[in-house]
Structure formats: structure tokens, C-alpha cells
Image (cartoon, rainbow, N blue to C red; front, side):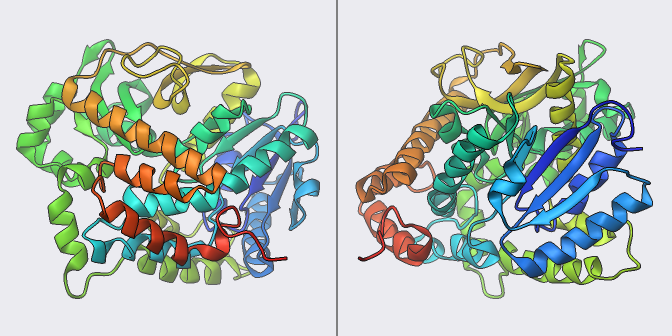
Length: 433
């Protein structure tokens, strides 16, 4: 039973009222042999969501025979005190702010998306200061050697901000694990046998090889499963073969910018935020049902597939010091040629007690490296803007962003983004008096 042997960890989940939380709880139950947990604390400022999600989590754990302690709270000191791991999965402004991120840029001729482009910058401005504040309190209150695991988007920018301040933090995304699972299915092998060369920045990565028993099977996959990979990545077949790599689905916004913008401008288009808001209402209703004790099937439509698996694997390896390789967001430290050591990248890393140590990668070809370097310049400016409250830095970030990059568009977008997010941006709009 979870927490019944050895000394277990205390895990605090910031944003514990998220509909993702039952996914994480299921992962903790399924991997209790790797990561015993004595105490799980869900922290959230929304009492209704916290009651629904906390109730669901309690029933799931009870059904598994868990003997640890589950607590829900809106008090940050209580949640962070003595924690071994702090998992951050918050969303400042909720789905309403997300809807703004996905719709405000479109009339300006820019794609609306919550983690890339102008919408991604708006989310970073809202999120980075709060996560840095959480990290400071984690360092002061959590257990010695505690880790902050960030699943909050935009993960690359948030983790860059944390790394710049020297926090003991690792960024986490589910994309690599999802790709590994899909390729394992096509190859009809255990996904853990598929070793991915997954490189780039968060939400801007390519799988450049997929080795099984030392043999790269990616060329075979690109040949045999072209229609499936084309559909899943959003990249047309000829581009897949030109790259000789499998781009993450987020690269669709770069490679197929005009097609996506036309779609978002089309009559009847529904932003993802609207779909998710309806799905969350459905999920929260199910979570409130006292007879539901297992993760609802509808959660699979929420996104974030294999997030729980990735998070538990990472925390387990950090605690046990197993030295296995996982794809995470960490300082480059020479792993990816063409980027400075202090740039946060998303690459395979060896995970042990001391953290995640990036594995040296092959140099990227110019068509990949150029995009990565430009996007990293934007991420750095996004951190500067979020931490300084400088309007000028926002304009510079949008000028560097590959999905904006024009003037006076960057100036006009800056005014609109700041105005739309005014109540979440005290560094830009200090309270009067």
C-alpha cells in the first residue's frame, strides 16, 4: 500500500484543484513501489474546485487502500512546510484568461495559442512572478533538498526563470513520453525500449531518432506510418521526410502558420479554451459524485496524457537516485551545441539525487538551430519582461518571437495584452496608494 513501507515523501501540489489532479493521484497509486508517499497536500485558492477534486482524490486513494494522509488547504505555508516535492500545475486567470490568450492575437494577424506566440507571452507574464514567489517560499519552508517540479506552462519560460534565480527546480512536459508511447505502439514494442533523441526547447522539439536495442527505427517509422505521423504532428509528409525527424505538434504553429491563422479566423471556429471549459465542468460534476472512485474516461480528452507517469517517474528517480534517462527541461550545460550553458533546454537527462544532468546531443542542423536560437532569445526576454514589469521588454520579446516579429505590430500587441491582463500584472500596474 502507498506509504505503508519505508519512509515516504510529502508531496505538495500547487494548483491541487486542477482537473489534472486525479491523473497525478492515479500515477502515485500505480507507481507506489517506486515512490512511497506518506502525505499528499492539495493547495488551491478555489474552495469549490478543491472540495470536488479533493473528494475525488480521497475516494481514489481509499479504493487503493492507501494509509497515508491526504489534506486540502488554501494556505500555502501549510502545504509547503516540510514538503519533499512541490508540483506546480497552476493556471493564473483560469480558462477565462486562456480564452483571451487564444483569441486576442487573432485580429492582429497572429496565431492565438496559450503557450506559444503572443498568447504564450501573456501567460508567462501572469505566471512567472507567482512561480518565483512559490519557489522562494519552498526554499524557506520545504524539507532540505526539496525539489520543485514545474508542469505549469509555458514550461520553458517558467523553468528558465527558476534556473536564472538558482532554484532547485526541473521543468516537465508530457510530449516526449507521449511520442515514446505512440512510437512503441507502431513498432509493437514496450515503449520503454524506445530511446528517443528528443531535443530542442519546450513545445519546440524534434525526435531525431528512435532507437530500439541500439538500432534507429525512425526512418522505418517515417516510411511505414507517414499518414499517422502526419496527422499526429500536423507536419505534411514531404516536410517529415525533408527534416528526417518527427516535430512535436506545437511546431505546427510555426511550419503551418498561415493555415492555422486562417482556421482561427474562420466562421464557427471554437478556441480550445472553450472546449476545455466545458470539459472541466463535466469532469468537476463527475468528481463530485460520491460513487465515482476511479479516474473518469472524460479526463483523457483534457490533454496532458502521461503527465502523471512522467511526474512520478521523475520524482521517484530524484528520490532514489536511480540514474535513469528522462526527457526534462533543465540548464543546457553544454548538452545542445549552439546554445549557452545557462539556457534551459528540453533534452534527455540522467536523473539522480543531485538532479537532472543533460546528455550531450548532436548539433542541430541550421533549419532547427536557427529557430531554437530565436525562440530562446524570445524566452529570455519574456523572463525579463515578467520579472521587471517593463513594457519595453514586452515589446522586445514580441519582436524576438518567431510568431510575431514585426513592428509596429509588437507595439500594438503589447498594449492590448497588458490591458487585457491588467488585474494579473501588479508589476506593470502597481496598486494605487
